[in-house]
Image 1: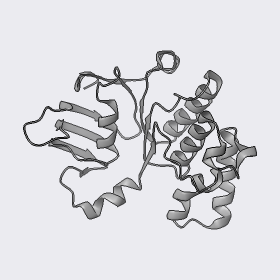
Image 2: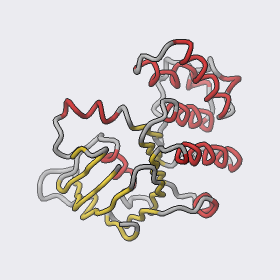
Image 3: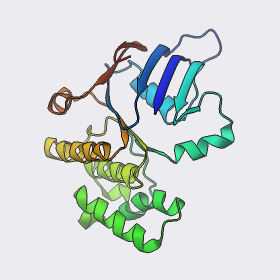
Length: 221
């Protein structure tokens, strides 16, 4: 599902310092990986590579069997449609209700409207927001916005789910509820990578980890 070989990333011009250096690892189809490391270790930059927001400065990044580092730009939207992403800053569309934000991936995929209404209502019920379907993001708390963002990321059953600190705005019961959802998706075949600082969560849900330190992989390669 994911294979990095000699991957390096720099944001500036050639010769500037690399943010990520010499990454070599693979995540099999249906695998689960924690992504660990202190603030500034490179976790968010690696996730950006994996959801194709940026391309490596060097090395090979293969997703779904495609060399994403060298694939034509026109082919990237097709790959992105197979990836669900939970962002730290939510990225909800402010003019859309909670229901419409979650429905967006299904509408883009042209799912039948009856299926959209059923699936979105059930997903928002599962994350504890059945009473907030019509609320705009500005009317929701940080934790509620996080749950809407999570529901939107998983509603279309992505092949690959990438989550950047998905429990950061949730209390412990909600964090546990989220992890049960993510592990169930994983059990059903979704490949999952979760970046977190929550050591208690990692301890309760043991799984292989990719650990970064100053842009280098120190375990899990």
